[in-house]
Image 1 (cartoon, rainbow, N blue to C red):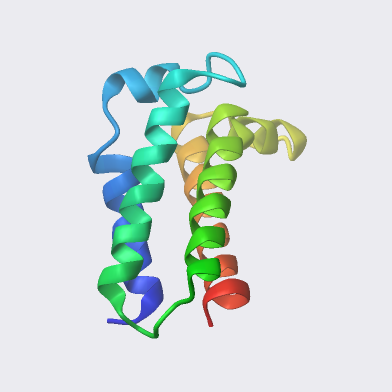
Image 2: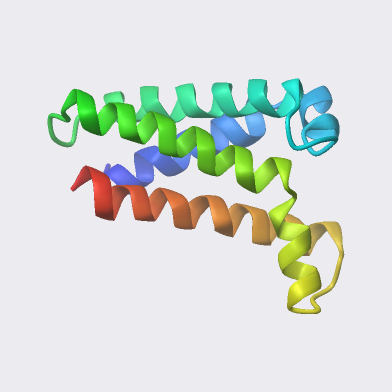
Length: 121
């Protein structure tokens, strides 16, 4: 499997399988909140472990540290600020839950692609 496939699987596990109802319902309650921090920590650890399993190339400690920090920060900002709803309002899209989920997932996948292209290869 290539690196994107590994990280995509890690994304699915971290953002869907390991996120419980408490995290999902409370992660947007305030900019600084425990549920979002816990969700993002679990997500980041999942992606970092997945990166290790991919073993595509040996990464430096700087690359791993930056990957960890940028993954956590970007995921936190997207989730805590409800960036998908803001995007939908800005572009006058439907406010349906389906559209918000697709926009949210697109944001996360764009971050993963950017991390691969600009940090990991």
